[in-house]
Length: 225
Image 1 (cartoon, one colour):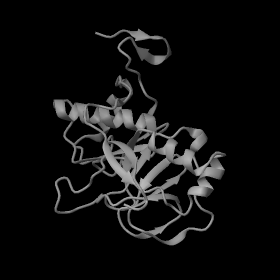
Image 2 (tube, one colour; image 1 turned 120 degrees about the vertical axis):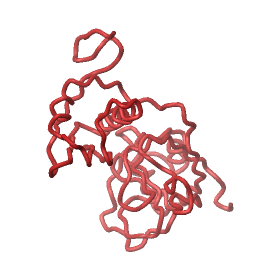
Image 3 (cartoon, one colour; image 1 turned 90 degrees about the vertical axis):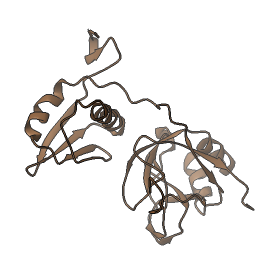
Image 4 (spheres, one colour; image 1 turned 45 degrees about the vertical axis):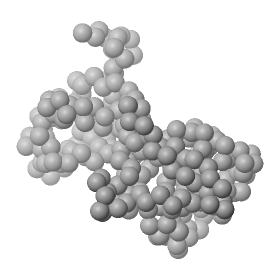
């Protein structure tokens, strides 16, 4: 049994995250958290409890940037009352190997990102490909994951003028996130590369290559590949 330690953390490394459960309709609960790190830890705890059979039956669990939605609960009020007492450990990388995404670092905004980072395009490639990312949540389009991992000094703004068409497979940065476009669409992210990986295939199981918690590494390949 773990014991309570100063700062709201237990001796087993678990902590009570600040969270704010809000009712959504008759059978939903939206849980607000402070940041994406807290979301990742809370989402992982929900999945652990669901696998262990200790989480009330729920139809859907949907993480986002600062929230997790639980839908299809029989008694959301009861769970809302219990959540503040949960001890939640930090999220870990888990045992699954990282998904490797081959990337040609040939994006039209690579030089602009280098300038924002006050470095060279070659260093952008080195830093980005040397980072292990995690899928914080999914959205925008089927197969699109919002990947975290870059330190704050490497966060970049969106483009002042979005593009009307971003090519499928574009590897892009915006704010704290890296993403890979699973299909062509408008977009305002900074494009640093391209990949031929199929992120969304309805005939595959699972259809999405990325899911919340997936570890991801980008592998540089020749622009002539």
